[in-house]
Image 1 (tube, rainbow, N blue to C red):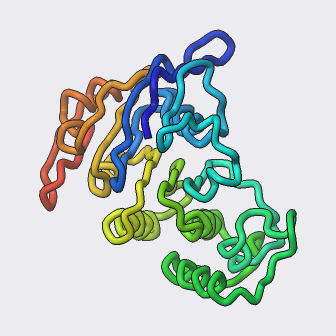
Image 2 (image 1 turned 120 degrees about the vertical axis):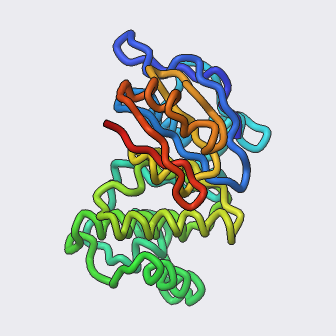
Length: 250
């Protein structure tokens, strides 16, 4: 997947300004940066939820805009910040069949393979089979993530996957993301506000500042005092923990 000269403006102000990058296949890439830096807008353009003003995204040798939605959904699964779903679904229905399982053709709920896979992802995300509107914010977030990874696509886009999660569940979710890459060969792209999660669980980091890419590279190349202090406009120090460069700021 390659982004070429992506640009997006709102009310005449550029939110993303001629951004280009390449997503390594079979790796975890995190998009980081302060609020308003452009990372979520870029994620929206990758997922086709936001139309670019100019530029293109080359996805498997074809402009992503040219893909039919049904065919693209077989290749790429998306967790957005806004998850509009039927609240009277159970967790098992959501994870098995997606946000709107009864909006199209009849679903055969006796499909044992689909149900068994859903149950395994529910267990992985520590979920019980309750109605969605009975869940806490963190439980819903885990249900959405289970739904996305259960689609079994080659590419997974996660916009703030740790949103609403406490430290325990956020850490477990990042471990699941790592397993998706290491054990199943998935390509994962995440937007993260917590840069130490990005550092510990990613292979590559794309750091945004003022609608442009400030630095794209390996974790060790991006997680430096100079890069982070410039992007976030606060003083950073870097410490090594388990061979990973993690940050503290003051």
